[in-house]
Length: 113
Length: 108
Image (cartoon, rainbow over all chains, first blue to last red):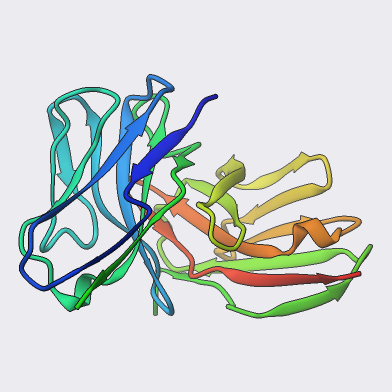
């Protein structure tokens, strides 16, 4: 089944404890992206990647890191999480180098206390 | 003025009605316009996208873009309870911007 998977689905952590949210797609898509979704603010892009070893900042990159060493994986790293990073996170992938036709993962709900 | 504005709703309509969902935008550089549907506790899924102005139809769904008015619409015909979800518009030039979403309830 063609899909985008994220792990973990739920995470509660404490301020300053480094964490990684994994994202993997099995559709051989070039484009991958991370978003956060917050009430009243909608879906905002954090980082995106057009291909392996190519990443770029979205609208809200502060406090996040990403890497794209393999085509199928695009992990999101929070080196020192803070409470304002409590959010619902989505990974997405898209064929080609455009942000059209994005396939979203199921989401990761992160709580930072 | 925000780049993309979308009424959050909720919008409640009876089953079988025609639903109209709308977004306005300020950036005339947007060329691609998308509609996503998001069920509760799920990721968004793409319904359809259009390029520039005009209409696009897919089954019960019709997307319209009026670039002169900076206004896009999604129409749902013969609405069903399974259409109850949050609908997100999105627009793109060299970056993608999402609306905040409209919550839609179809009443049986």
